[in-house]
Amino acid sequence: MSDQAAVTPKPSETDAARRGVAGSAPRTSAPGAGSSRPPRKRRPWPLLVMIVAILTAALGGFGYWLVARPAPIRYVTAPATRGPVAVSVSASGTVNPVLTIIVGSYVSGVIKDLYCDYNTEVKKGQVCAKIDPRPYQTAVDQAKANVAVARAQLVKDQANLAYAKTAYARDLRLSTRGVVPQATVDSDKSALDQAVAQIALDQAEIQQKQASLQAAEVNLGYTDITSPVDGTVVSRNVTIGQTVAASFQTPTLFLIATDLTKMQVDTNVSEGDIGAVKAGDKASFTVEAFPTRRFVGEVVQVRQAPQTVQNVITYDVVVGVDNAALLLKPGMTATAQIITARKDDVLRVPDQALRFLPPDAPPAPPGQSRVWILRDGKPVAVPVTIGLDDDSYAEIAAGGLKPGDMVIVGEARSDAAAAAMPAAAFSGVRR
Image (cartoon, rainbow, N blue to C red; front, side, top):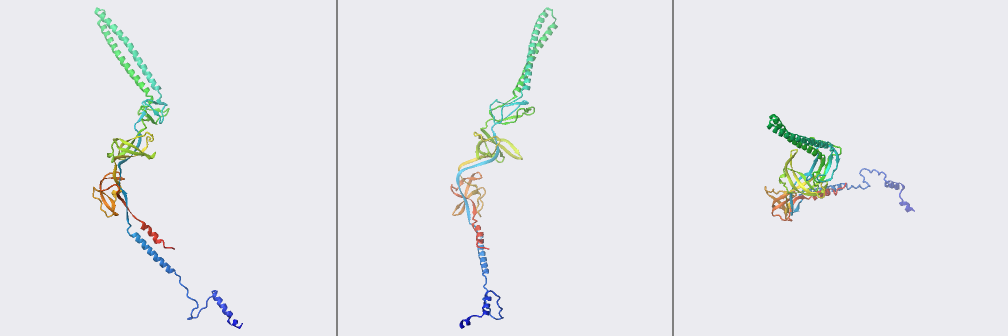
C-alpha cells in the first residue's frame, strides 16, 4: 500500500496534463528557455506548381516544334486514261413544234359555234369555228340578184338588136327605090351599131356581177374557220359569242401544231461561240420538268438573223429532237449543250494536271505544255502536245505519256502536327 501511494501522481499534476491534452493555452516560457513542442512541417504546394510549370513549358516547346517544322508534301495524282473528249457550247432556248400554224379570220363577225378546243386532233379542212353567216349570205343573195338583172337586160338588148337589124335592112332596100330618104337609112344604121355595142356592154356587166357574186361567196365561205393542216390545237383564243374584228389586223383564233412527235429547240448562241456551231452537230439538253433525263438532238439550222437583247448579240440555232413519247411540250425552257468537236478513245488527262506547277519550278516556255509525274517520290516534268480540251479533260496528242501514268494534279501538306499541338500542350495541365 505504501508503494502504490508513493507512485500515484498528485491531483494537481494530473489535471494539468489533461488540460494540455485538451488544447488549453500553453504556458509562456521564459526567455531563453527551450520549447517543449516540436516545429510545424511546411506544405509541398510550391514544389508541385514548379513541376507543372516546367512540364507545361516543355510541352509548349514540343508543340511549337511540331508547328514550326515544314510539313511533308503529299502529292495528289490521277491516272492518264483513254476516253472521249468533247468540246461543247452551252445555250438556253425554248421547245417549240417544228411547224405551228396560226389560224385567223378574214371576215368580221360574231362567233356562232366552236368545234375545236385545246389538244383537239384536227384534220385538214375540218371546221373549228363558225362566224354568224347571215350578213354574208345576204350579200350573196344580192349579188345573185344583180347577175340575174344583168342577164335579163342582155336578153332585152338582144331583142332590140334584132329589131335594129330588121329596120336597117328594110329601109336600105326602100332607099334604093327612092321611097325612104338616106337620112332614115343612116339613122337605122346608127341604131344598129348602138344595139351591137349594148350587147357587149351587157355581157361585160354580167361578168362584173358574177365577180361580185363570187367575192360574196368567198366571204361567206370564210365564215367557216377551218384547219389548213393535220395537227393538234395548242391554243384557242376565242369563245362563243365573241365578236371578231378583222378590219385592221387579222385576229388569231387558233394555234395548230402540225406534228408534236417532232419538236425543235430554238437556242440562243452568243456571237463568241457561233463560229464553231454548224448544221449536223450533235446536241443534248435538259428541261426542268425532267431534270434527270437528257434529250438528244441534232443541229438542223443556224439562222443568219442576229438577235439583239440589251446590246448582247445572239443567233438562233435550231436543234431538232424526236418526241415520240410526247414528253416535251411547247414552251418548255431547255438548257442545251451543242457538241462542236469530239474525239473518242484518245489519251487524256485532267485539266488540273496542266495547271499544276511544283514549288520553285520555272513555268513552261510559251506555246509549250507539260505535265508532272512522280518518280522516286519527286515530280518530273513530261512535255506533251495538247489536242482537244473540254474544260474537264485534255487530249494528249503527242508526248512521253502512257495510259496508266499517274500525273500530279495538286499537292496537300499534312496538318497532323498542327492538330496534335494543342492536344499535347494542354493534356497534362489540370486546374
